[in-house]
Image (cartoon, one colour):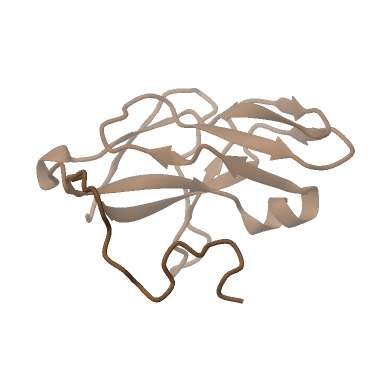
Length: 147
C-alpha cells in the first residue's frame, strides 16, 4: 500500500507524522483539550478519518490500522491506550481510548501526540467448526506452562 487517504474532520486536526525515516508508527495528535482524571480513561478525538482503498484487498487479506501507545507519554505520564483496531471499511473519526494510570489528573492539550497508528497486514480465514483438534506436545497448557 503506497498511499492512504486521510481526511481532516476537525479544524484542530493534524496529519499523522513519522518521527524518523524508519519509524513504523505514525504519531496521532489530540484535537481537543482533555483532562483525564487519575485512574480513569477518556476518548480523545484526533480529527482524522482514514480511507483504505478496498479495491486492493479482499475479505480474507487486507490492511488495518492499529492504535498503539507512544512510549514517551506512556513512560512519563503512566498512560496506555485501548480499543485499537481500525477496520479498513470504517470511515468515521479515529478516537483514542486513553487510560491514565497515574495518581494525578492528566491534561492533554490540542496538538499533543497521544498515540500512534501502525498499519498491519492481516488474514481473516474462513472459520470451520470441528469436533476435535490435532494433538501437539504443548496441548492445552497455557499461562506460564512454557516457563
